[in-house]
Image 1 (cartoon, one colour):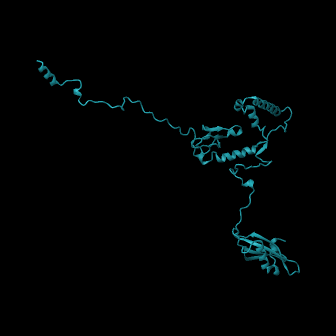
Image 2 (image 1 turned 180 degrees about the vertical axis):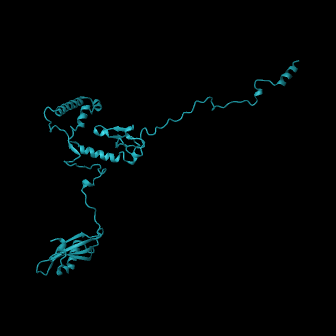
Length: 308
């Protein structure tokens, strides 16, 4: 029998009249003054009735105290079944619970936090540790075996060197290749993990962003772009322009911003021409040029007359 048919039955008279018993049970569970007026009752079955009371508890708007009472067959005493606080049709409810793995967002991880990864995480796959031995005499077997031996020899060589030499050659070429292949890691990125990361980076710093649409040129021609190694280097790089919004971020080669190295090269400041003459020093002009280095004509005549 369905729940709708069960609740449509006529309530038992004695159970329906046991409002005081239900209120006392609700007040004992909650607190005096928190249980409000009697709202309604519902028949749950034969001689089983639930009474609803208004809840006046702060923060529980629209909730109701539900007290279920029952009576045995041919008995005249009504007994208490259960008391519970239930939301009503217009009650204030908390958002639907979401597991932490689905609530986690980028940037939520703080200092001291640990983010466990599942054993079957699709973004990761086991790194080569020598357990899955390739078929005998195969190219993979010979390459991996030879590479492992060369890594061990290089590690021994680096151990015997002085600290100064080790600092310069700490990541030798052979060891770097081995780490790139995942020989020193338990798990490495799977192809799915690479695609997910590429899609995420393309969405944040890709060609379809408003910044890239207004950029004068793409990042692939920018001098501030640091290339990546591996397969991702064909489509992404790292921005090294401190004034760019993507500084230190992985950007698509088709991304761009106004900080492009060749977008607007600043011209050299203009150099004034060499002056023809020194116009900064004062020029001396005589007030009476006719008196400089010459005797007036009348003075010469007076002198001649005096000596005659």
